[in-house]
Length: 131
Image (tube, rainbow, N blue to C red; front, side):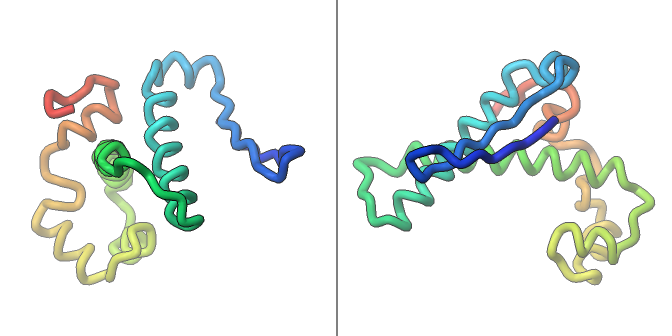
């Protein structure tokens, strides 16, 4: 994957994620779906910072919640794939204290003892029932 940011003639920026053929095959519509969710969040941040009013904020809250669930699955997958990482390393990655990471790992909640439906989605592309 390649990410570029290009200035536009009107003072804006075009952000592009270019996927390889293999990445496109593995991701299907998931990359476009996640980019749309992130896009709504970015637009909402720009609106609030500029004082632009919106008629309804529920689509932003709904899409941000969906993105948080999906990214949580990606995070859990990455942690499960890094079983030999030290507590200090994981604490640095997550912005948590070393003691919090150690405690959560000991309790089997970091990552969860069993993969969540969202981690399964990240691994397989199969959407959870609660979507």
